[in-house]
Amino acid sequence: MGGTPVFVGTRVPIQTLLDYLKAGETIDDFLDGFPTVSRGQVIALLEEVEKQLIATAA
Image 1: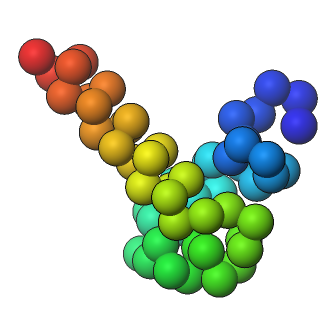
Image 2: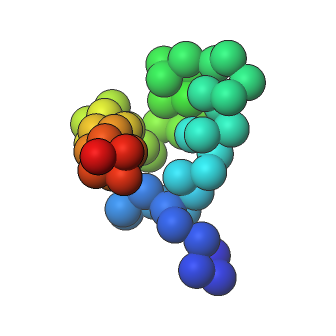
């Protein structure tokens, strides 16, 4: 995917999840559309983003 970050083991770009969330969709909506991505992968990504945001703000 030319350097585009994707969920491990899939070809689903992380940006797709962010686009869903920005549009007001839920994690369940995203998972329904992309069954190769697990809920655990989504939660792990969001936890990492949270950790980095907190570190940046500190």
